[in-house]
Image (cartoon, rainbow, N blue to C red; front, side, top):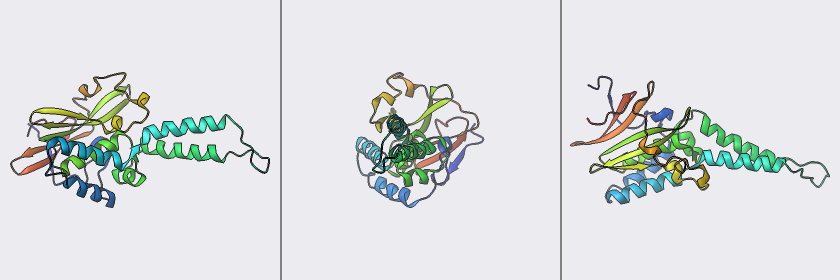
Length: 226
């Protein structure tokens, strides 16, 4: 049935929703910490993996918005330096920060870049949580999902299934300090509206088997059962 399905040796080289999970010192450090969660209960492993992901990077989308607002506010007022000339250094610094976070959000960087910058949006956060879940031996199944926010824009989140119960995890929304940016306020059912198909992209999941967790890559849609 799944003629194009591939069983992956490990998560290095997978690219859920365009984010390449590449090898890096920071990812190895986080993976080691996640493996330390294996002896805990499911609930404890779930919370532990969330905390590792949240501590690894700030929300780049939120920071992009914050620094753009800061730059705009600073540019509204002319600051005069000690030499009686206009001093735009603070607004320029804010604008540079805005550009840095915007690049993370809108450019196609690998996971190692986000970990090095300690900042990522939902794509990077979803890929990282998948890796951490795998290393923590979390759940019976784990799917990297995407759901529409606005036309042309999607949010990436994770779905972990354990003992037949689905747990939706959005590191993006959990990492927000400004809750006005939380799209679940406008659409509380957004995580129930995951794309069933996404032509042109590979879908990634892992599944518990008698020999342990197995990572699966499949084009266009998820493999729900092996």
